[in-house]
Image 1: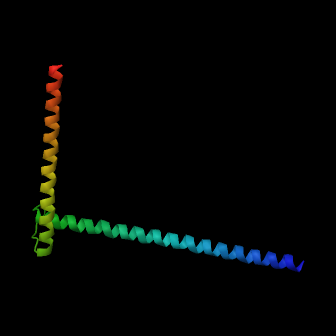
Image 2 (image 1 turned 60 degrees about the vertical axis):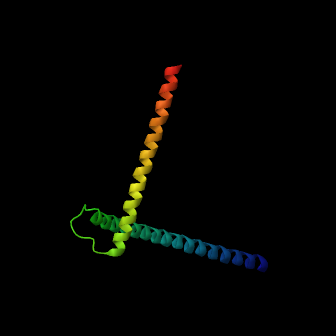
Image 3 (image 1 turned 90 degrees about the vertical axis):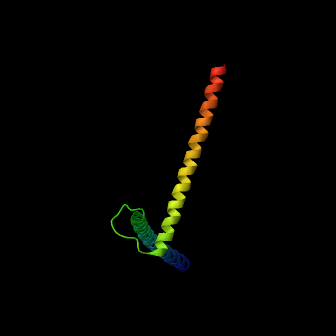
Length: 109
């Protein structure tokens, strides 16, 4: 019975170690989830800061934008917004042109 006792003790020790490891992994997983939540909060706050700085540039908020680096970035945003508006106008023009062709084709039938 000595061999069976030794096997039993070894199996119990291995099971205990596996249980401890699983517990550690669970704890690490929880901590990583908390880290991810904190990083998301940081991203959210940074976005709010960016939105506020841009609103100062765009004249929606009282105050002056007194930082050249931020001003340059705001100019890039304004340029991208203008490009988006132009592209949206081109989409509408293409749709209008397609609709006009469809109307002409329907009238000819």
